[in-house]
Length: 437
Ligand SMILES: Cc1cc2nc3c(=O)[nH]c(=O)nc-3n(C[C@H](O)[C@H](O)[C@H](O)COP(=O)(O)O)c2cc1C
Image 1: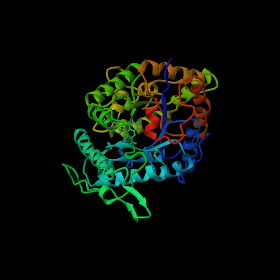
Image 2: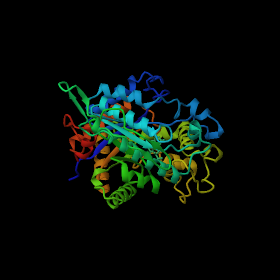
Image 3: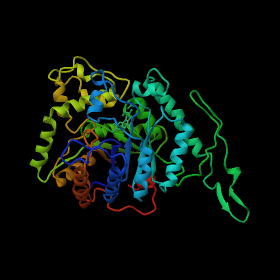
């Protein structure tokens, strides 16, 4: 019998599927559409939603921003934190995770923002820790180039150490609210951290009250050896991509081994694999939908433009009907690139896109009726060993129909099989929900 597994969802505060027949018009900028999605995810008992983020306008595909801007791909994108407030106030149990880059925010501001959010959301906030992966982003923060991965993660380790120390700069019981003695906070329970490291100097203490989780949940998506090491040390949940059940199992086992060696209980880390279910009333319907999507010339171009944005490699330079001329390397999102290029397979670029028909982040194909897909998800989790899935769409574009297929078709089918949560325990924090099974 498969034990329960966790569900999360990742989207960005960007245009919906604005050109499709079920899009919502392409202007979700008041946050209401995404908030409505968060409410639907809570109804389906998802553990959390992640708001992805990037800090640049891509110019890698064809050496121009045209592909990104004309198709609303990765950009325009609004800041995730105000959206997280709106989503948090419209829900009461769903975890809300926002991406904050260690490149863009000083650690004091991240700690302050995370503590404020966790207070406002009653212990449901999480931070998706990213180091950013683009020269174009680095150039928005005073750098000429993105530092090499090794250095980005060394800096991120120091950064997280500071953020943790800032949360601990207030004892849990520092706020006493003693009306008789006239004491709001006990100053002996609040101390500077006086941190001096290689990259940062931070005095502290934090100037917010301790939050319900004290340390909000940490989410991370490292794929390289450095990224995995960082995630195994720090994350409560890891966003992962892999190539089928065997590679999913290898990834999870690797993270758990690394965590064990660091003295952590591996069960404290929930590895959630990205999938992009394609659902239909019948299996034929679902397969037809998938075939229509991959046959569209726009889909091929959009996937390649997205790949260019994430890796800063110009995929417009390659013939789509030939194999890639050599193995590609990037200082950007290497895991995504390696999975995509399947080096040695001899496949043409078009075949690589069609192969990854679930998009760049699909760990295992899930095409069929809600019952078929639910059954398959259960089998895959059984093979992998746990912990759950991170649902999304091939190009991060959403419409209401897709959300309803997931929350009102797939999730009930999972729940009928006892595979996913069908209630929340009231009052639990995001981290407690993750640790429940
Ligand atoms: C599903 C998924 C979502 C991600 N979301 C973001 C994001 O919002 N912002 C970002 O800068 N990087 C994001 N990343 C990139 C990761 O943080 C990480 O850099 C990447 O997976 C490569 O791993 P590495 O840093 O160990 O090479 C995401 C990666 C994946 C697989």
